[in-house]
Length: 558
Image (cartoon, rainbow, N blue to C red; front, side):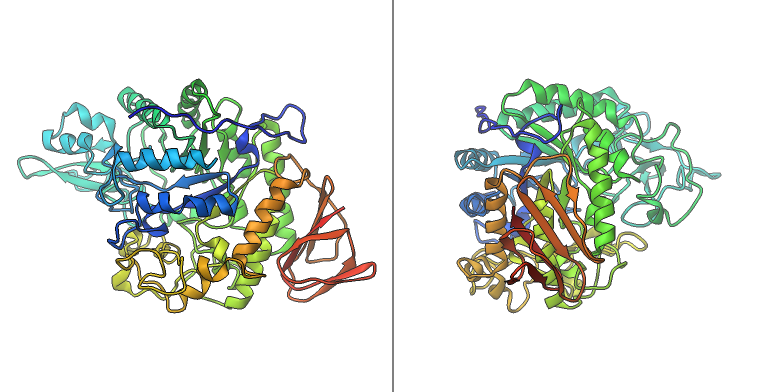
């Protein structure tokens, strides 16, 4: 496979002296979940050919880069986040030739490609792990994972009390080649996803090689899955408590956010910097504080990190202002852009989250008030795109898609749905294939139906139905991304200037620009800040004042 380089970086200016510049500082990055984006061969499952065919749509939407969730060879125990071969494409998605063609076409359109990298764990069908099991205790390959003898008189108890994120113990006992009970291995997620031992040099060497393989293919960066999980505390100490999921995000755990991960990412940064075209790494790092997230994007580590604290914030002016300030303050000292994200493949879509009462978390099982949810989602999207830094858009949110909360149990495929006491297991609701056309067996997703059932009426939310329709959510996103790129006061930056506003409202200024947000359920009258640039709902000025409708964001030029 010949190397081809990414489109050249244009760079961006920044409001703070000394900040690094680069395309990622103000990029709008679109997440594609390949299973559910577009089906090119008509087998009911999305694939790379389908993504390739829809690249012109993403170009027209105005995004800067496309992040692809995993498409590697995998048994699909966790929708591809269980990788058996990091240098091969799963046949359900296509081939390396398809990947090469997709990357080339994207670059021809001026789009960058970011691929998912899963370094915390492999599939149990990875060649290393299969050989480690087959060779039994004493196999050198077992040192590349976390194999341990069990506790108890006969080793019948797990080596420690860690719990899987998907529910149940984080350990599974093996069977020796002679059929006797054997050692245990660690898996922070499903049993089919054994954790790598990053203390072993062969693991580090392998992933440096994998990075180079995909960089040589021409990818522009990596989204690093479970970036906070690679290093475990020495000795794998007991946590001493149950219901450990409730502690996540509140404290540094012995298996998450250990300081040793940063040495790994410094070594990766050296490799990324060897390649032209501003190749980047993005951390999926769930940490207790935004300040600890900032550790992952110090100047010699990664370039961006997901802002999960922002994603989890309720539709409330005071809470939003606090998390915006905290996020910007944390990233400013390390010179990294703050990122903003509202939805992804692991959480309930924000059009449904905001349709329900606050405080229910990021996985919600009830549809709530659809009209309210869409109104708030549109307002939240304009707020996100007005903030300084980089924004992430999850496929279908530009259509205002809600979560599908009534999928039948027999259709669900989320592995955590089948394990007690883990994640809620309802992530399938945000993964239902998106609608492209008003009609058809899968609303234009593909000729062979869809791997998850789509709701009746999905076609009215389709790209076809919304394209050219004044006031549609799709046209709102297109207009917002275009205005964000064109307005000199939007995009990259290190801060905002807050303006006085009534309770329940946010108002902030950037150069030549003001954003006002009404998070209340009632209209509020305020002085007119300038000329309306864009609004999430119709507004009309009355002389020197304007009535902001409930749950509405307005952009103003000043």
